[in-house]
Amino acid sequence: MMNKLLIVDDSQEICKQLKWGLGKEYKILLAENVDDALKLYRKHQPEVVTLDLGLPPDIDGATEGFRCLKGMLDENHLAKIIVLSGNDERENVLQAISLGAYDFYQKPIDLAELRVILNRAFNLAAIEAENRRLQRALIVDDGGMGGMLGQCPQMLEVFSTIKKVATVDVPVLVLGESGTGKELVGKAIHWHGRRREAAFIAINCGAIPENLLESELFGHEKGAFTGALSQIQGKVEYADKGTLFLDEIGEMPTLLQVKILRFLQEGVMQRVGGRQDIKVDARIIAATNIDINKAIATDKFREDLYYRIGVVTINLPPLRERGEDITLLAQYFLRRFSDEFNRKLRGFTSDSLAAMYDYPWPGNVRELENKIKRAVVMAEGQMVEPWDLGFADRPAGAVEDSSAAAGDIQGRDGALRIAGLTIKEARTLVERELLLAAMKQHDGNIVLTAKDLGVSRPTLYDLMKKHGMN
Image (cartoon, rainbow, N blue to C red; front, top):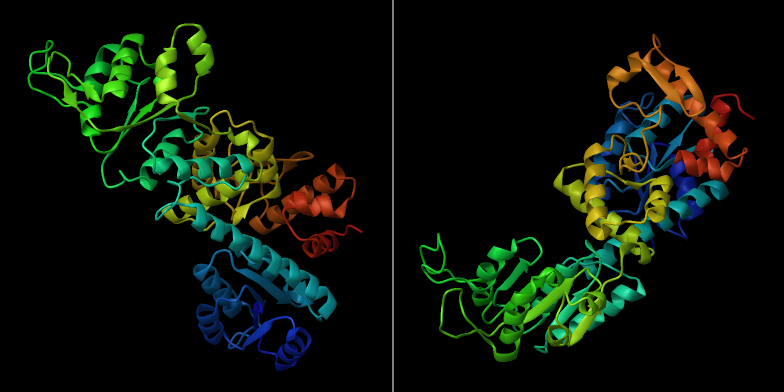
């Protein structure tokens, strides 16, 4: 199936030129006004759009072009819209880019040059679509993995093991650092098994004081201790016919380990203060982030219990060892929280992605989730920057609010005083200083400078020309 390209332009000559020159590569859709363009966009969802800002009835202005741009971005904030502009439309083009346009190309049109920009836009759209497909395939609802995502070999092995053990009622021990998703593994095993219609009961053995943990697990009889005014069932009984997930079992006191061992061996338990054996049919899945072998060697964990709960062991890799899963997870969380908070963020800058890959992630996936959530709340542009994630201080040029325009801004390459300037003058001054600093940092390398500033090379050339840099 051919990729779809929507051309929005009131010039029949340009439409004819683009249709003739690109018709063999793309399915061409044509629109001469905003209403027709939006109808075609909603109906066909083209991957890429070229947009002339001067559309009727405002062919000498840009109000209709901006209305079209906004309407398409409201439909899909990841839309790849390339603005076709004339020499005298630079300010409108910059505004369009700031509103979310993907790139721009200056008329007159050279098909070879435009084809390069189009290919890049279609490739990016395809990558984003594939990421969304993978996320839908891996995310969990029906037959999924309980919210877990991953493409790295370690996680694919985890998913395979989950499916194998889910249908067999053997105890499973999940090992992994804090925040790697051990409880999600337990839920996925429960979901895929024959007990999925019954309860999944989780208890954190390390979060409950030792004197209360036994009662939480096994319940108690009326009068078993001061304050025990009635009979209470414990987590074990609530898990009957279902699954009991014992998180941080490595923190469980030794005496309670004996009681759990008996339950595993005989399938019966007694409430605190009780004498009657109660038969419970519950599958046990346990998890810990401690070095279990070291705990056994130091008599902090019973070896016989380890062999009982660890019939099958699943090792979850830390996030820092999962390679490109970092990007996959970051994009998933970005889309999820953008929808939740009604924010239209387009993605991550190259600096943000580099910072995420350089960071050791001691809190693993849980920490990544929290950082992305923070970024969605804090981001002021359409792309997430390193400072939105908490990896760096906000640079001087990134004004936090409109009041900053009346003060001083510290540029990348020294102090930049903008007090007393208009917003337009201040923006131009900051833009020039950022451009100079980036060019100096990368010794004039166009590719690295464009990447650092988050713009395309054609955009960078125009910015250089604007500020008189050859």
